[in-house]
Amino acid sequence: MKASLPGIAQRCAYLAASLVLIASQNLVAWGVVKAYAEKRALDLEFWLTPLSTAMSVYDLPPIWGAAIFAYFLLVAWLLALMSFQLARRTNRGFVLAVLSVVPVVQLGAILFNSVLPTREAVDEIKQSQAASARNVTMGLIAGMALVVLAVLVSAVTFGAYGWGLFVMTPLLVGITCGYLVNDQRDLGAWATMKLVIAAAGLGSLALVVLALEGIVCIILAAPLAIPIVMLGGVLGRGLATARHNRRNPLASIAILPMVFMLEAAMPPEAPIITEYEIEIAAPAEHVWQALIGSEPIAPAPGFPALAGLAYPIKGTLKGEGLGATRTGVFSTGTANEVVTQWKPNRLLAFRVEKEAPAMEEMSPYRRVHAPHVEGYFTTGETRFVLLPVAANRTLLKIASDHRLRIDPVPYWEPIARLAIHGNVSRVLADIKAKSEANQRRD
Image 1 (tube, one colour):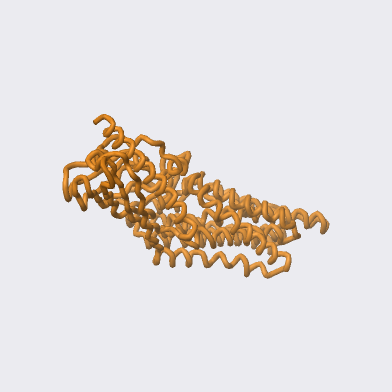
Image 2 (spheres, rainbow, N blue to C red):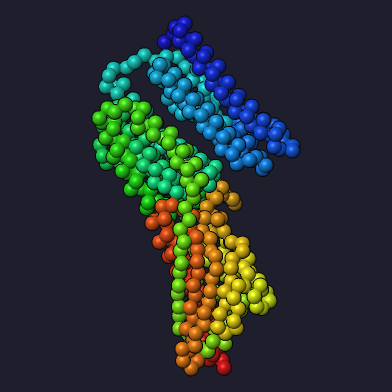
């Protein structure tokens, strides 16, 4: 269908505004490079993915990084808004509207969308079916995009792992997807549940593809997120069938960055104190030697290894007495420790000065941009107490304190305690086996 003069003017305005917005992203990236990078070529990455160029500048202050990311989000929102408005006027180009916010292909999508001829409206039934299919596609893409954006803003930008990321984000993914897929006609509860879970699954897959998260972390969070996504789907469907104003449920997404900023300013810190003991059929002298020895830990690591969590391999003590250093070798790296209490055959305590990463993500990439692998679960001091209880029998006690900086604590603390229990039980079993083997040799 031939475009009218006002239609041509609208297309030209859309194209011009879109090009200005895209160019502004490159201008921001250029300013970052000039201000904070000693030398950086304006290569293909700069032109196609300016956000990646800006965020890869090492000396960029975090506050500026957050501001730049917020601006790029605003640009993406404006591009999507203008593209969908044009698609509704021309009755086509909805897929191109989605692609208008995807780096690398967005320029081509915008150019193509601006020249697509207007399509005449079909009969009401076919138009309703086509609109419903478009809404399902939009719901899936919106849910997937919301997952990725939430991780980028909360975890990568603000370093916040809390209620906003693990509870509010799944809820809003469900509401957004559930509302959009039922906007034209009610698909039913079961179909809505499948679609909102599919949207969350696509978002999780995108996190792995973009190296923002690993497979293990997504699996660990799934039991918490899936029921919340389904609840959001119920709410979104209810809003759609009630013909609620579109702006109200979808505008709630705007509160997420504020929640993430608040959680970053007031991060959680839950103390976890653990105490374990084991009776060993050997004198304290043999138990002490097994405790300070540097032989590898023999028993299989169990749950921590399956979950990709750090588990100890061996410890090497350098020197004796207070101030001696100990290197703990873990599956994820090494930890530097300092002896704080030393009473041969009775007491050994050490404080962790440098942590090994808490987990190693399962990913097709060598490096995953997930801050939670370091600093969100830490160990303070560990104490071993040896108590002779009978002839050639010793009670070995171990106490340790940890800090968990991830919310919701009621969900993550049991997982942390399960990993601690697996690691400590393995260490105690190894000390027991080595001590009793030395006793038998005597």
